[in-house]
Amino acid sequence: MCEWSCRAMTFYTIPEVAQILRCSPRTVHAMIQTQRLPAIIVGKNRYRISQQALHELLHPPKEETP
Image (cartoon, rainbow, N blue to C red; front, side, top):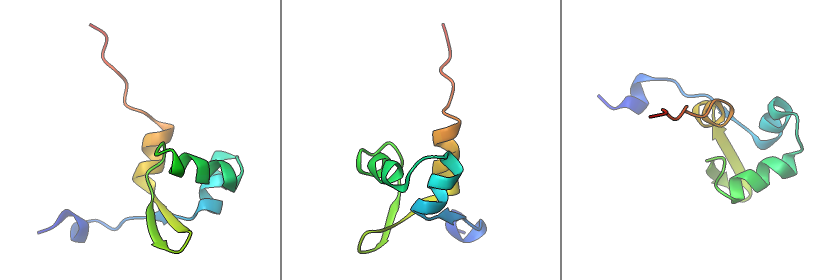
Protein backbone atom coordinates (compact mmCIF):
# COMPACT_ATOMS: atom_id res chain seq x y z
CA MET A 1 0.00 0.00 0.00
CA CYS A 2 1.24 3.48 -0.87
CA GLU A 3 2.56 5.75 1.87
CA TRP A 4 0.33 8.58 0.59
CA SER A 5 -2.83 6.60 1.26
CA CYS A 6 -1.69 5.47 4.71
CA ARG A 7 -1.10 8.86 6.24
CA ALA A 8 -3.20 12.02 6.22
CA MET A 9 -1.09 14.99 5.23
CA THR A 10 -1.56 18.56 6.38
CA PHE A 11 -0.87 21.47 4.04
CA TYR A 12 -0.66 25.19 4.72
CA THR A 13 -1.19 28.25 2.56
CA ILE A 14 1.41 30.98 2.22
CA PRO A 15 -0.43 33.32 4.65
CA GLU A 16 -0.70 30.51 7.21
CA VAL A 17 3.03 29.76 6.96
CA ALA A 18 3.80 33.48 7.23
CA GLN A 19 1.79 33.65 10.44
CA ILE A 20 3.58 30.58 11.87
CA LEU A 21 7.01 31.96 10.94
CA ARG A 22 6.06 35.52 11.95
CA CYS A 23 7.14 36.96 8.63
CA SER A 24 5.43 38.41 5.58
CA PRO A 25 3.77 36.30 2.88
CA ARG A 26 6.26 37.88 0.47
CA THR A 27 9.12 36.35 2.49
CA VAL A 28 7.50 32.91 2.36
CA HIS A 29 7.02 33.28 -1.39
CA ALA A 30 10.70 34.20 -1.77
CA MET A 31 11.68 31.10 0.23
CA ILE A 32 9.62 28.98 -2.17
CA GLN A 33 11.15 30.65 -5.24
CA THR A 34 14.69 30.06 -3.95
CA GLN A 35 13.81 26.45 -3.09
CA ARG A 36 14.53 26.96 0.59
CA LEU A 37 10.96 25.87 1.34
CA PRO A 38 9.45 23.12 -0.84
CA ALA A 39 5.89 23.71 -1.99
CA ILE A 40 3.42 22.30 -4.47
CA ILE A 41 1.52 24.41 -6.97
CA VAL A 42 -2.24 23.88 -6.84
CA GLY A 43 -3.24 26.61 -9.28
CA LYS A 44 -2.02 29.81 -10.82
CA ASN A 45 0.10 31.46 -8.12
CA ARG A 46 -1.41 29.17 -5.46
CA TYR A 47 0.96 27.13 -3.35
CA ARG A 48 0.63 24.64 -0.52
CA ILE A 49 3.38 23.84 1.93
CA SER A 50 3.36 20.49 3.69
CA GLN A 51 3.57 20.27 7.45
CA GLN A 52 6.65 18.08 6.99
CA ALA A 53 8.42 20.71 4.84
CA LEU A 54 7.67 23.38 7.43
CA HIS A 55 8.92 21.12 10.24
CA GLU A 56 12.16 20.42 8.35
CA LEU A 57 12.69 24.16 7.84
CA LEU A 58 12.22 24.85 11.55
CA HIS A 59 14.15 21.78 12.73
CA PRO A 60 16.95 21.02 10.24
CA PRO A 61 18.74 17.69 10.72
CA LYS A 62 21.80 17.99 12.88
CA GLU A 63 25.10 17.15 11.24
CA GLU A 64 27.21 14.61 13.05
CA THR A 65 30.64 15.80 14.13
CA PRO A 66 33.54 13.39 13.55
